Image 1 (cartoon, rainbow, N blue to C red):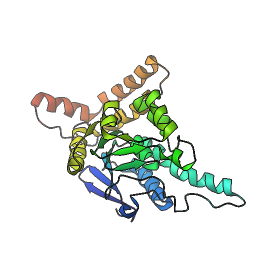
Image 2: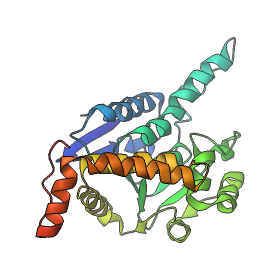
Image 3: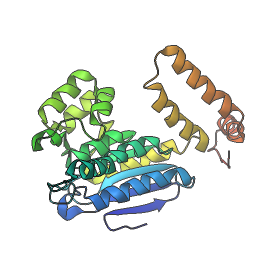
Image 4: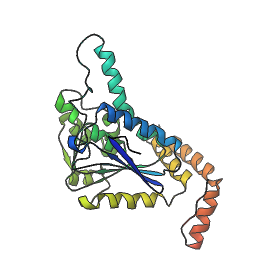
Length: 266
């Protein structure tokens, strides 16, 4: 699939989604926001794709929202209504990413600012290049530092103290500190980013299709569970359902026979 501002390339059960505005450092225009929303919404109907790798073309992951576009409604009557429509167009993207049943691996090279930062936060796993620099750039353009899910997602990834530092200042966090804080899983040379993402995706493919999807779903629910009992109930539900699948039987047989599993339709 190619929609100009984004390109999707399927490699078996892995799909590589590339932000494709390198001349604008992959800044998110309204057209790109619409394309991303449609793409992530459509993943629920695509069992052929089991893992998504999100990356940017060129030297930056994503420099944020395109300030030269119609992302900011012009003054005049009805501006608040028009601006709310534009705001929700952008803010829908991280919600759709979290709701997608497929794990999403973000490969962060260069700048990931504002909207780009939020796209990285909304992924399930982040791998960075050594020159990766991320920040909540919203604050630097006169709006709040919490946008497109950053106020919700960042504290859950790095804790409230570091999240407060980043969101209240708009300062950059580099690759080394991102790794120390757990914001990214690993830092690899720039030329190895895609290979590292594909390797991690292939590890995920060792899980059964339903098991992989239900693990993401359970993680999403458990992170906001009111306590251990609720978390355990979610896990118990997941396990009982998965124990009834043919893929569970196949996974056990493959483990005993020391061979790769051959999954079917469940």
